[in-house]
Image (cartoon, rainbow, N blue to C red):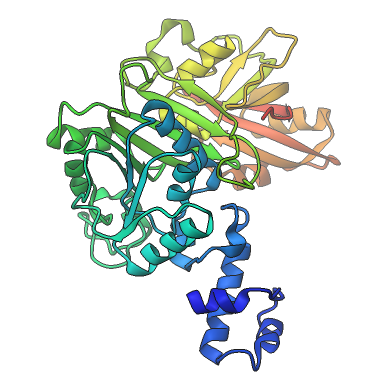
Length: 425
């Protein structure tokens, strides 16, 4: 990898592999040329994810596993805000995305990885960025330094072995904590012995399952969760434990990191957040009489919470912040019947409601005809048909493109013709 990086110094390889190979003819062996072309391609891919990628040592697996730079920068500042003087052990460092972000904010740092290739890449990337921090080859299951913050990112892409449910390693194993490397049970034991911990988890995993596992290993261990999104996607569920989960921090937090790709890890990252209540349980609208379903569904505005809010179980918190109510206690859509100004929030998508009708072919077609709507973009919740099938079912002869929201309300379904309002943030 180092030889490939050295070969690229002073060269601008074209994106076309054949043209790049022709340029390298006579300058390197075929094997070294292939490695240089692959490294160059990885650096190009990394520009949207990591700053300063044009000089970094990268592997395909390391880049796939690396966290988005904006999220890394936000997390590094969170750790520095709560525990500014403690050493952080980036125990699954990979190619060094988290380590670079931590070093950039001045956090004391020790990095390690079980893979010697990734450990070497991490060390080289830190050095090239001006942070000659120690990097070791070590197994994250056996902490090599204490007291410190243990930062862990279990590998969820392992293709070997079977999960507890008997499925071969693959996508299903990404949501099975027993199939990760290291397994979450081993991670929990490390956390139980640490001053503080921070674990990156897939956003689709059930936080209640994580709670149950922690309760079995370390029932008194303080913990909190954040669901983080950037670039329009929900990126991760982050578990914070020990001294990183003080009582002053919300037990559940939805976070949206704003902005485009970073130019530097020490760049300030803007974010918006929605905290949950102190108890840590999901904020269930159905349990709050003030958030009951309104009978009058002549809505003026419809709001869809962003994925981080939904996964964090904070729909009720967002409803209170916007002074709205779910159109059904169990649906992730909020509505209101009276308001002149659009209810905007960076953690929600807002729609102006043009018309609404029960979900049946004739009334929906009539509603769409009134607005000259033909082709449809459908958003739906609580209906067994796919959005594509619903769009085909109600497609009309009109000339305009429309947006139709389909939602279950009580025991029936309703369709709303809506106009998207530009998002803030």
